[in-house]
Length: 277
Figure 1 (cartoon, rainbow, N blue to C red):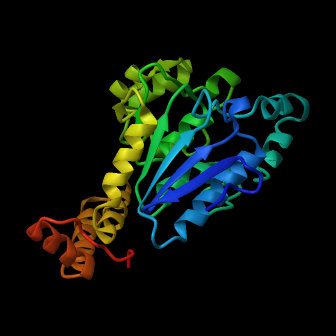
Figure 2: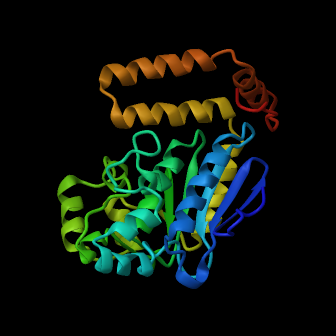
């Protein structure tokens, strides 16, 4: 798969692993209209690929993503925010454009809604909307010297790119309140200790690629089932979770890829899986 037409995002795919790189290094991969469009378009295109096994999400240059483009921020001063809303393709933000999300929210949610695991590699900075894009991933590898911030309050705003959904269960509510109210900058080390990051890594992209390749070698049906199951866990009650466990396992037991996983382990060889069904 080639780069998107506006080259805001570069994608290469090898052995079922999509290497997705935000590609606006001169602006620290800041979010403008073209970047929002590219994030959503890339996510939607990947979702339609039956052979996709895992995704790595990273940023080219000095940073993962510095947040909202400053030109968009400046536009709020001159027109009460209308150009900000128009520039991200959503009109007024209350309008739902992509399922339960508006367009900027979906730029983050599209990664959580992909049917396969997404591993983010976070370096440099991840501020505001950039942090929320990273939170859309299933797992985040973060360099210790990365600077991260729930930064919206600095600009008189609140997190509005699905951050309130994506931090649920990761960060204690009182800690999240403090991070929102203060808009302070965290190191990668503190971010992982608080739950915004998953693992510290001196080379986050290498760590994320290795994790993605490990996932890609597993039964693709089971990996997709596990991601669906986790979505239920994060939003469902006990009855819904227990039912989902049973339903997903019923679909897996005795399926071709599940049988191949057993045979490969018994025969001590690499498995040969079919595309996810």
